Amino acid sequence: MDAVHFIKQTLAQAQFRLRATCDGLDEAQARWRPAPEANCVGFILWHLARTEDNLASGEQGLATLWAGDGWHARFGNDVETPAVLADRQSALALDIPPLPLLLDYQAAAAERTRALLATLTAGDLDQPSRSWPAMQLADVLRHLATHKNNHHGQIDFLRGLQQDDWDLPPGTGVRLPDDA
Image (cartoon, rainbow, N blue to C red; front, side, top):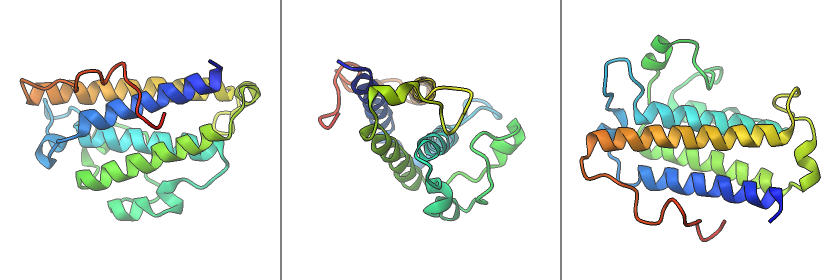
């Protein structure tokens, strides 16, 4: 297996697990916080989608979906709202959109990543990143995989705190989506 194929499968599985974890969530669960200043699932999804959009769009030299496709307006956010907020109070004050809208944006960001990956060769991985020029593209994609898995774990944990019998569907951790 070549490196690009491995990265495609890694990110496809991370996306598959993230979506399986969010399947069946309701608005109350998406907004629930285990402590007053803790992140909720909705904020984690918002941040994860914004970050993936920024990275995948930046690597392709495209406007972000956030700005270019008007997701900021659909969310009722300013186009300049950063993906990583400056402090806890900014994160808590963010107006989280309805869960279906959040999941649609997250899926669009993941699709932007798939489009990027479809164009890559192994030689591209050693090239400087457009998003972070001090890094190679492989470093950015590794960060994206780690970032996505980290936040998937947080969402999975929050789901478990709210629902005693919660677990990912059997095989989700080892099976790839059909289109990977």
